[in-house]
Length: 75
Image (tube, rainbow, N blue to C red; front, side, top):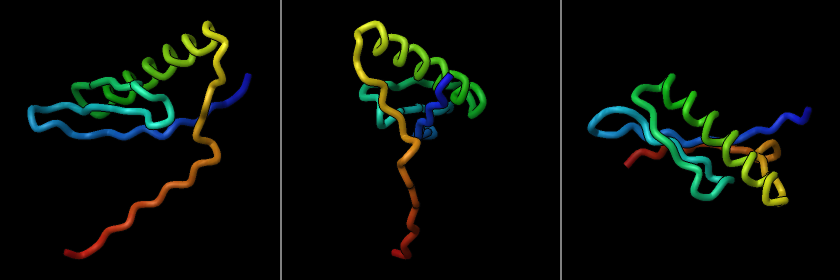
């Protein structure tokens, strides 16, 4: 079994909860009521997306070679 790695972005919503997107899987977006729920929903969304790619015979991308850094700048 291969291990796939995905970078996810969690945006806290003003009305509560988190919207989750997966940049390497276009259109793969979900929502969770709290951080733990958002992570569970992300896993479920990614698994479903991968399953669909497999059914369609398309390549499965992953972020295992992606490096990410955040820079904080004073304004």
